[in-house]
Length: 73
Ligand SMILES: [Zn+2]
Image (cartoon, rainbow, N blue to C red; front, side, top):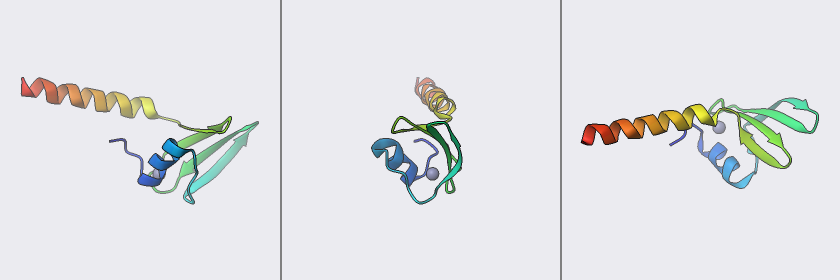
């Protein structure tokens, strides 16, 4: 489970922003926004929302899973 709040997960899945997404700045055609609930940063570009720091979360989840698998052995 990512550390995003439910509206942010919906945003990632559906591309629809929620009321707690606040715009920080506009960069050319892109928009930098932040969620007031979970403090996630998003980049809106070409009609898509992109989470700014998913790699860290993903890698920590993967390492957590491999630890669990290791402990079960
Ligand atoms: Zn959020």
